[in-house]
Length: 308
Image (tube, rainbow, N blue to C red):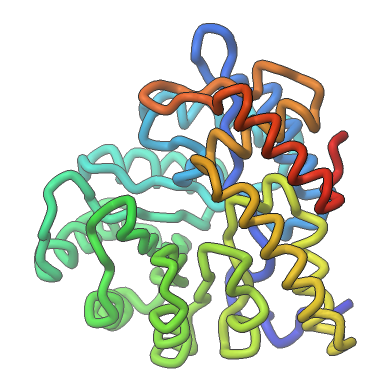
């Protein structure tokens, strides 16, 4: 099956922002993480984003994230299959993580704006991204801007994107739009046809593909990678099945987001892998209450999501 219509983009298709498993000391379990990344790739994901929101990125230190990336690569995952979350509040941390990703062959980076100080101006954000890109100073870098205002409270405006594309046309590669606003996503795909625009949920996958987006980067791909990939493949094949597949994927997503999503996904992972440590989150996040976890699993069984 060919993806020729997307060959001009540095990344496309179904990507999963991987969950980050922890051990009993609340440290990243790199063995579990590597196996999970391999599972996602084998189950249909075109690629995996490490240390996004779903991966609890901002609960981990720069060093922890670097060690984990090296472990995943050592396990046999290729750099081209990864997109590395590198955006931090402190500019030197973002630069260090981005340089480290590049040094390990990972050219795709998913970069949050500095998110602690609210009401940051576009001028300030332009300076921050510009200083990061100039500090890294490597035109092989592919920056995917991470727009997630419900969490970061720092939106990335279309005008800011335009200014960055004008200043760094070889480096700004795309946008992950996790605003939950389909109109915004489609306006970006219309305004920036040269960029890889990814909706941040599979809910918008089919509509996005029909309107110039290149795929999705979705948390629930941790649990439903094959089902989400089938939507993409059906669209490429024009076989007419994509709407039905989209409806089923939407129902599965709704089951997860009825609860705190990361906790719900980790609860499912613990069942799927038959491995209870998967339920652990790093504080301040906490796992699902037992009754909520059981209700979630019951709902997912009714939706025929694999339990093992």
